[in-house]
Length: 302
Image (tube, rainbow, N blue to C red; front, side, top):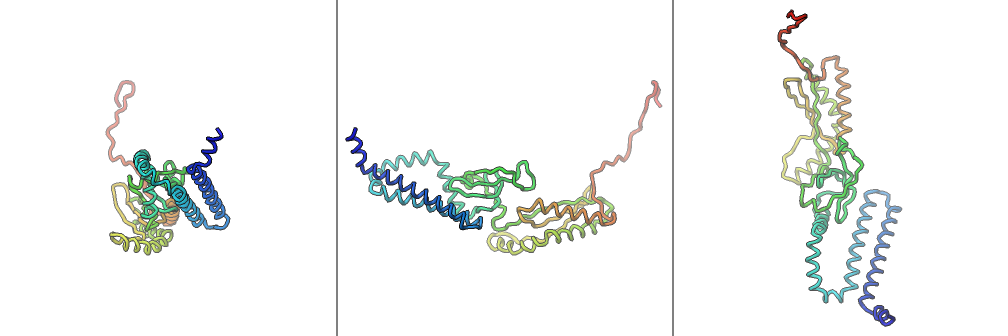
């Protein structure tokens, strides 16, 4: 037993394994210490997040280089075995490998970044972390309307960037076009209604349009795309029930619901002050002609 223990302790392979284990533990401890220190010295949330991610990636790289240095003289002996084992591992872990490739594509391909609102793998939300295997989202929607958070944190495999379209709400152009429709009943002063909606739009979202012009110029310069109107626009359609006045406008992608609330509130306030010249339409049922009504009393028709 003693001879076995002595042989085991002087075995160079065992020494390398012990060295590797101690080195990995030391690297992990240093990375975690550095990440905790960043929380005290870096106050900006985005800068702190990026610094922690950089420390984590540097730790992985350091561990890889350290293991390569420790086992460098043994690697040549296991080349064939590593090749066979690597093929089996690659087949078994193809989803993991695809996720790592997805992480590289996201990191260097500009698919999205932390803070962007995206739709990935059927999930819509704000990116709060990009890991090597998964992207973490604060989910929006589902049972909550208006693109608001529902409280669920969802982790989506990075491999989905190769399987499904990646919808980015805020990449090169951090604004969205949105519309509201105001039904105005026939007999109202539709010119006044149009003027009211246009005035309210300028008041509420006019600054968005002016701010979006420069951002849109960058999109036009970068992509093969026609120029588009970013100023608020009111269009009119008359149908069998009422006059539809539709306002199309630019809005911050995170403020759609709040902006709609402000627009509708101000439009209704202005309509209330129009002196009944403008009225909001509602669905009604008109009966043009009724058939004769026969009433029978005591067996006799009357």
